[in-house]
Structures are given as structure tokens and as C-alpha cells.
Image 1 (tube, rainbow, N blue to C red):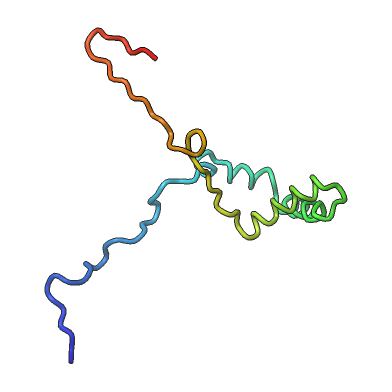
Image 2 (image 1 turned 45 degrees about the horizontal axis):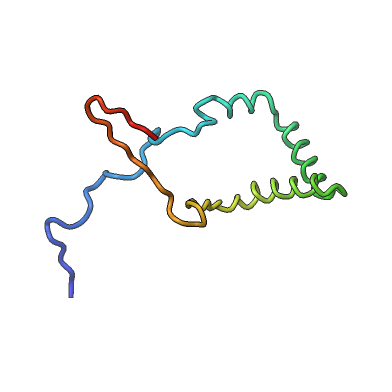
Length: 109
């Protein structure tokens, strides 16, 4: 049996989807940091920096080893999403006080 589509079904052609140049630019791009880094930090310097970072992963000093490993893993595999718990005292709700001032009355704490 053939399925017949009604007159109102389906998407209109050539609509939707991402458009070239749409969306907000990243902060780094907005400030020109990417171009500046490309100019000041050439490919050979980047390679030396990454090599040093990889060497630091084997350091006998724990803080150096730990931080370099964290950085390499975060950039290699992506940093996990950080979750922040927001709450009041003892994990309860956050108390919000809203005061309305009308006429010549002054708000007091």
C-alpha cells in the first residue's frame, strides 16, 4: 500500500540549517587572539611546547607531572563537564528577598 502525503506535510525546500557566518563568534576569535597566536607562536614553537609538556608528564615532581597530565588529557580527550551544586545553608534552598519600594518609602535591610 502506498502512503500518500497530505498537502500540509513535509518541510519546505531550502529552509533551515546553519547559514554561513551565522552564530556568535568565539571570544578568542572576536578579540583576534587566534590570529595573534598564529603570528607569535609558529608551528615549530608549538611542537617544542607540546614536546616539553609531554616530557613533563614523566617528571619526578608530582605537581609538574600532575598538572601536565591533566592539561594533556583535557585537550586530547576533552575536559569533562563540571557540575556546580548551588544551594543554601546545609544544602537547602537559596533564600531570595525581594523588596518593593513605592512612593517616598525607602527600602531597609
